[in-house]
Image (cartoon, rainbow, N blue to C red; front, side, top):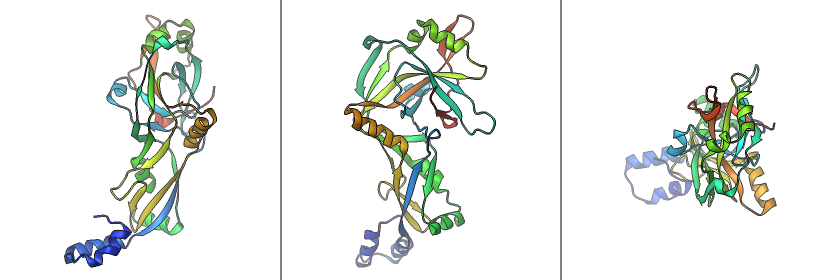
Length: 275
């Protein structure tokens, strides 16, 4: 049972049983502390988000779109080299499209778990020492329970991204000419909006509080990726593509067309760079 400090202060006047008092005393021994949650700096700042069943069937991923990439963008992914912890995905080409190639916009409000991100946690030294002694992995706990919040967004999607690619010989030739082992994806949809934040619903105590041994840790997120997007919104005064959806694709060497790649892209092992 977890209780707030206010609950602890009020418990003495409740006339509750000795068993419950014991539980309350145990809970009330926790201290309130602050923990700063920093997202990794570029280029390690790729944040991927859980997707729905429709996207999972395509092997698709959803990414926080710090580079303001648009639907119709082709990405080439290179695996990590010697001494590297992550591979790189770079935009290599943008398909020609018109409004008739798109569906939407349709409401697409997001409150979804972050699937992969690199977080650096900053807390007081005694907090770090206690959590290590208790073998409590705060970074893992925060990564597990962090969500992306994008209220009021609307999704715009390419109706038939494969047909659009296969009508473009330049796009096909780029994919066919790639180095062995490189992979490709197409941004086939984006969710547009004006607000992005990260939050944590890891406990029933309250938003942005994690219950750890001896402490209630009040989380404060500071993330360059989030700040970048919110700055773009402020600068443009308009909706921006906050989240983009990437579908893995590959060249069919027999018919020289592009098709869905059934092997999903593991975005936890990639960062998105510039070409």
